[in-house]
Length: 454
Image (cartoon, rainbow, N blue to C red; front, top):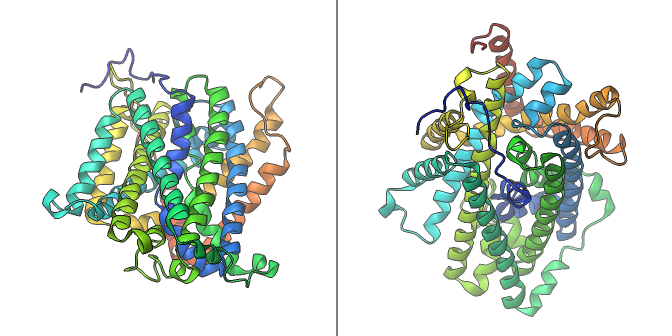
């Protein structure tokens, strides 16, 4: 592929409709958490009721964030998502630091994690060694989906839509199998551990469980990054956020009910997690009792498809951030070049794929992901807080989507984000310090223009 000429080098093709936009929301949120988070949440919350309540609280808080981004996306339906929101509301350096962190750590580390996760779980139904081993499979997946997204955005969007439909069908099918095939006496599992009390809601364990659920909901911010390629973005960006988050919430609640129905609370609490790294995942334990090894293969396949959908969505959306920054002169100009025929930011895609490949090959993405979680929520809070400034500057010309219950919703979301950051600092101060230090490292880069301007 040749890089496009200057005549069309900066034009993206609006090739995504509402269906593809919804699939980006659902596909980038539902990744691996739906299969794994129930274990750590059970350990923290202490009862089925508390775990389910934590999912509901996380869904409400995520909806608040999505509502803020819906108005921001309706105001600025351009490529770059949060970068654009931050640049409109805050000094340029804030937007640069967001893009700096996202480009070098956030996006490639997430892509690498999905690729390695898919390669690891493929061992449940494939001969991984015959295919070259986990590392070869992971690198192949990164480049297959990177190259696919170098063609017209409609292709990547269509693949995202089909992968999202497949993953939702597989997860719904797994939940259905559990409810129809598990012994009837398993209903007792859902009513076990009657030690729930409202005092648990104020406990550190419940807060940490909500924190774990919010990590599983993370990704609702990704779709607006590709807003410049969504047809009628002023209407379809907020609509896609609402529809997508509703689908995700229903899927998470239904799946967790199924996992706790298929296995006892103790079995879920001792499933695969940092405490029990060699145990089966919670979803596998839920079906293993009555499907045996076939259950491992089915869950493994569902996990792989879910991870691939999240990875494709991340590849498609994240490359639009350096593209938008390059157009504003904050990244090297060649990041703004798009292919002359496909009209996608091919340079940004290829560089992003190279960094993700390096992280996947070295296995260093896990720590990097921990470091960037804290910094991500700093920028979520700043983006939502930017609404207050934008509303003050609004002279009535804006006719797109506006949040009802303003300013209650953005205030609640910003407070929640601050609480979340405080929880993260308390649980892992070292990782938070590293994340903050990496953000700070971008200040001299911005100040002295090491990357150059147009």
